[in-house]
Length: 316
Length: 296
Image 1 (spheres, rainbow over the protein chains, first blue to last red):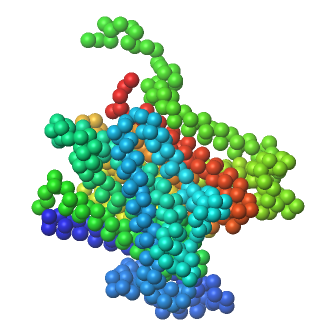
Image 2 (image 1 turned 60 degrees about the horizontal axis):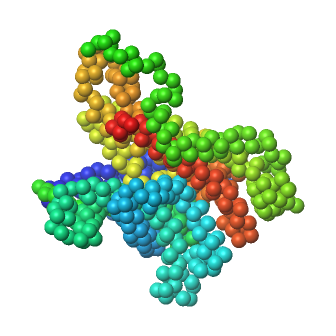
Image 3 (image 1 turned 90 degrees about the vertical axis):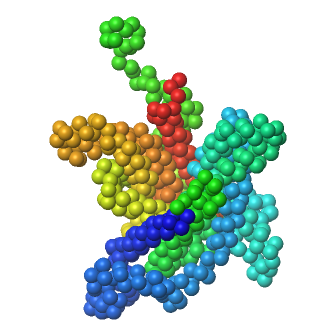
């Protein structure tokens, strides 16, 4: 177990290194690079630009600049926002809660609905339910998240007036109920794609398990079909889902960005777009790196969880 | 047993296109056929629609602002500037579909080359290349797309390039796995012993064996690329107005959602139809091209 842990940790560190190289390359190889911000200032001269470049250390060789940048990153100095000079990491952590809240509630929704559809589809294979779930999943994967959000707002907020059209809470209210009612629509909109993916995988995983010997043994012992399904099939079919949850993380995070925009949700996605609008590159870069690190951590956690939970995996 | 001893019926004349096993299997896949029909209609509408409509997609008519669908000749209504939505929709479709198609071509080329090289040479080079694939996959693709789009001049060409740059990874993985599984086979050994150059072995001997999965992945990549263009254009960093695209038609739609919901509904339906078609076709191709699936 320990050696697996170390090996997996090592892999993640290598990936982190590559991720930082890609991030740095985007920032520096793009036309203008980090200087493009200052080049827009009125009255900027070539000499002044060169001086700023020198002050920022931008006239040195790229590998040196990369090492410096990476070293500061490791120490928690992610630079300062061009907009208000606050440290990037502070700004990001200020928006983290909203995004995590949205991602977690949406993941819970998609796991519940997705597994249910998947199990039902697998146990009633080739039924009308199974067929419509297959087609429905493919259509759900084709609907742009933001457009689905717009339609949901039109129907449930503007026409039926059941739910608020956006924001995370009503100013001055902020009760649990208030948060919950604001959370419903964005969570479900963000969940749509994952319900589709989840139900497909859960169906396959259930079908894999359902034909195995231990399930037949359980049936032969005279357990009720329901008990066999709940205790023996679902538990085992859920195992590969942990890995999937790790793999889906980039999609959920990316989807959160779009969903947050439509629902004016004050999370990392909105921060990202606002910062893009202000050409606030330190924040943009910070978010890019932060999300990649979050994704790497997520998949690392998922793998470790599988190794812990699955009795078939005996490591090291 | 030689061919001559077999009944002649087991050797039919060269099969026609529709007799081909893959084609027949594809044609039996209902969703795939629906997908082909939908996308054909959509393409025809985008190609010929603008010539049939009495309005230019850029013509502004402030007296006809916010006309609901089916007002006069405005079958889909007009936008906040009084421009005809149908005319914009079809012209936008040309751009969105072309961006989707060329982004697919480019990302397939990138993914295939990296996958073949990594799979064929393996070893350290292969590991490094595949780790780069993993690293690219660690970024949520929309974050990466937007960060790149904010740096470049957002012409349709550049949008195509950056979509391709952020969507080649899956094809690379797939090709790498396929090539790695084949590279020790006898035909590769034979090609090596003949002294054929590595490039020849990679692209003429190995690659054709992976063509099935590549076609499937490429089809699904078109769907993804159309979605990606819609996302970044919706957020204002993709195709720039006045040039219409399905994504940027939705850009201003949210603020008029109550007053003019058709502004949001019409382009959204077009995107969903196009993306659904390619996903259906991809699913059908997967079933039709998979040699391991049942033969009847």
